[in-house]
Amino acid sequence: MSSCGPKMKMDPALHRTQKPEWIKVRLPNNPEFWSTKSLITDLKLVTVCEEAQCPNRWECWSQKTATFMIAGEKCTRACGFCAVKTAKPDALETDEPQRVAEATRRMGLRHVVITAVARDDLRDGGADHFKQTIEAVREACPGIIIEVLVPDFNDRDWALQLVMDARPHIFNHNIETVERLTPLVRSRAQYQRSLTVLKKAKAMVDGKVATKSGIMLGLGERKEEVIRALDDLRAHDVTVLTLGQYLRPTPKHLPVVEFIRPEMFDEYKQIALEKGFRHVASGPLVRSSYHAAEFRPELDVLEAIEADLRAAKGIELGPEHLPLPAIKPEFEKAIA
Image 1 (cartoon, rainbow, N blue to C red):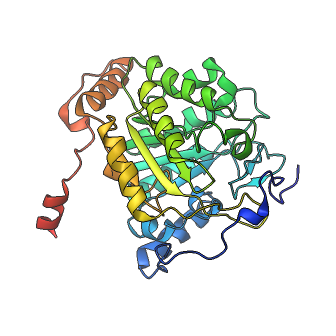
Image 2 (spheres, rainbow, N blue to C red):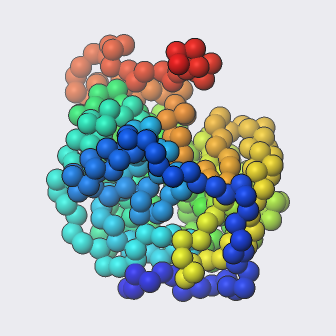
């Protein structure tokens, strides 16, 4: 497979070349950004922040937050929106889970996001590698919130179960776009399959996980289609949502059909909250892991996960082992 990007399936003439004034990214000027970048380089890790050309990486890294991309930097799929290289993947690095755990510890993270390229070349799609990384991070950083952003594992229940057995606190799988556009936007993925993966993941742990998904806007979707997608996600018990503007990585990727105005993102957020989503991040520069630490699962979910993990080891649960509750914005201001 080539690394030159996916074959165009939409008319390139649809592309909007002039970015509006609300699509602005500030340049990094915080020393924490550069120290984080140096740490990641030293440990030979890959972050989706850089691979996917995330416009917020300077902001997240300055706040000592990062999304680690495991299982290599070569994907077996060629999604029309994605900047990650499509090529034959390399063998898994057996020490990668420990390197991710070490980076998480040295960065002092309270919330870590672990994602991966699609590894259709592996029988389990990389599920066991996810499991090992979750376990390594939890061992190195007790009490940390662990979020995973996973591929669909080709709908193999036993592979998905491997990930859920490691008990992440937040399970994220993006549907990426509305149902009509899925065949154009997502390589080999299926809209209904993704919804099913989200529901199955929650059922596998008796509901003791927060499920999350995201949608890119600006690919030619209609408002009623977005609202239908929100209904579909809620019908599959998803409670955390991200909505962001699609930005074309290269001219060989899908065109930006429309730049969605900030007011429309605000409207979608209100609609989503009214439909029962517990947390919604909606804005032009929002990405799957944008300000991920601002959402924390319900306390009963956190307690249930920690109790199950410790029961499996024959250890009695104590309050000192629970993840710290999120600091409310008004208290953050008072502390500052």
